[in-house]
Image 1 (cartoon, rainbow, N blue to C red):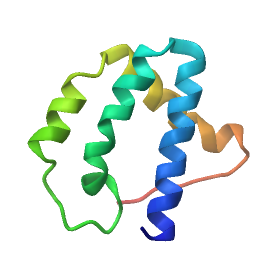
Image 2 (image 1 turned 120 degrees about the vertical axis):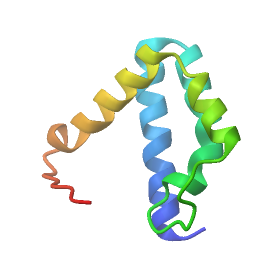
Image 3 (image 1 turned 60 degrees about the vertical axis):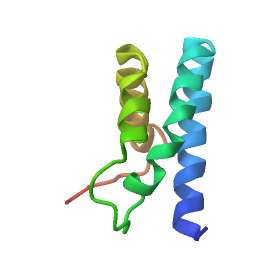
Length: 88
């Protein structure tokens, strides 16, 4: 596993732990099941289509859990005073 993948895994675990504090255990458990999506979301991956397992795992996540996780994740750079401008 390369340094980039380790950093991304660390980021995902951080998000899961942040969500765990506010959403009990159901949400983090659901998010933990998304590890099957790692081959699709890692930058530089040659997988351009998520696996059926990834899609099933994503569909099993509660919408509020997923939306709150995305909201928390996107607020981290600002809260940590780390300006990020993302392109493609």
